Length: 93
Image 1 (tube, rainbow, N blue to C red):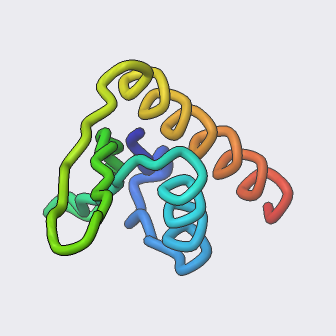
Image 2: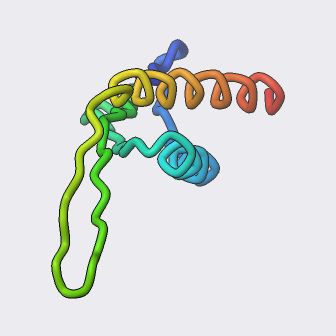
């Protein structure tokens, strides 16, 4: 998801957006990072899948990966983030 300035101003990365991204991370089990562009008129949020669980039995650990549904969960996280972000922004203006 990319937030782009439509008024030729800097895009501000607000604290509540980091909190929202963290919530999407927990709810959808997807990772997210943001990129602030050098002209500061664009901010990109990138969601990616990370579905690895470690199960411990005694001293041995086994790693399991669940690729099924991973892409769908990542897309759902990005879409939910966008919807929540737009809803909050429209109510704050």
